[in-house]
Structures are given as C-alpha cells and as structure tokens.
Length: 328
Image (cartoon, rainbow, N blue to C red):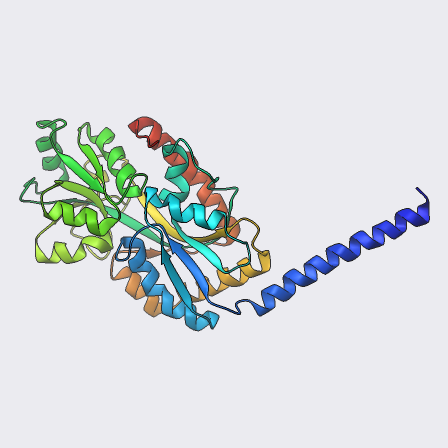
C-alpha cells in the first residue's frame, strides 16, 4: 500500500471517529427530548417504588421531561433487568436496580440471560436501604433479637420467613441471619414487599427482613414489631431499635437502589443523567423525605457505582455460598 493511500485511509478513519463523537455529543445535548422509562422489577407499593415516587417529580422538573415507571415484577427483579439489558442504548430506558438484582442474583440464579456487570451502564445509586428484622408478635412474641433466636432454636424448620422475592436482599439477608444465628427457618418468597408483609400480618410467615419504609406504618400501629436493624449503626429515625450486630457481632446486611441503563449508553448522556440525580439528592427536602422513612442518600459517580456493583457481586457470592441458597 502506498504512503498516500495509507494517509488517505487514516484521514477517513479520523473523520468517521470525529463524526461519531459529534453525533454522540449532539444526542447528549438534545437529551432528553421525550419521556424516559425506568423499569422496576418489583410491584407498585414495594420498597423501591416508594423511593422511586419520592424522586420522580424533582427528576422530571430538573430534566424537563416525564418519567414513566414500568413495572415488570418477577424472578427477583430479573424480568426487569433482562428487558433493560436488551433495550436500545438510546438513553431513554433504564432499570431501577438493587443490590439484589445486580449483586445477589449473579450467584443465586444458575442461568441468567444477561451479565449484571457487562450488560449494563451504571448511572448512579440513589439510597442505602436498611433491612429490619420484623416479627408478627402474635406468632413469635419475642421482645428482642436474642429472645427471637432463643425461641427459634427450639423450633427448627417449623417456622416460615417471607421475602419480597427470590434473590432480593430481604431473602439473602435473612438467609445470612439464619447462618449467623444458628437457626433454621423455611423461606417463602412473594412477589414484592406488599404481598410479603400481608402474609406476615396474616400469620402465614412469622417474620422477615423488611425494608424499613415498608413496615413503618405497622410498627407505629403495633401490628408488627421491629427487633433489629441490619445496618452497622442504629438508624437515626428509630434510635431505640438496636442493630442485629449488637447481638450478633459483625452482622450487617444493607442494600442500595440505583439507576442503570443498557450497555452502550452515550457517556455524555450518562454524565448528564448522573448530574441530574446528584442535583435531586442534594435537595434538602428530598434528603429529609428519604430520612423520614429511614433511608440515607447515596450518591456516586458512574465509575464509583460500577465499582460498587463489582464489589457487591463478590460479597454476596460469599453469602449465597455459605447459605446454600439457589434458584434454578
């Protein structure tokens, strides 16, 4: 090949790259030009939906467009994740993921049609969510974590605990607690936290790890009892509730909620969406609303969020291995 021919091809290649960069930049500048869909893997009224509703209006106001929530509940959030993993990376379809959907499920499910890391573009986390050991006092009349463990040790395999679905942090968190406490309860998964909580109220299950915001009403009414927080420190909203770690030293099990797109979303759009989320999370009113239901704001850059997902995937793999939990 002649030097002139090589130089000509080089100029063409540079022109193609420059054109692609310009198109990407132009797309980001005009984004968003239509409604944005955020898919949720759990039903309306679930813990993640409560958070989603709190940030919806400020996100819409800041972005200047409509946020549409699409509910695809089932398979521990995998149905929603699969839909978004296969979506066009045009910046208009995202999933509201969790430590369950993008940490636990990679080890819990033997066959997934997507990779929780490689097939997604992390945008930003939104909150850290404490789980709380919750009991129906009519079924297990325990006053604290220690008494709860003592009662259950006398009834191996005879009591059921519920969760918001296979693979959710409410499932694996309790499985982790089972191992740490040396007790044996049977897991019953439900499609979302509303159904799981209703089952506990009905006495179908005695207890569960519930996301705090989903049981505050029952706690105040006295129909359910909160025994211990899964966080490393007591939650400021309910400082009277001890941590589980105060009874089982070193125990901790928390989850996060965050927004991810399919692989290949324009980095400029990702940066713009991330900055928008940061603006919303910097709003004192939003911080107060989230704190009012026991959640702490969690902001990270896309790169930091990517590292969080990688770390959580490895950590939850150990929990899954120790608990022996699996889903076909």
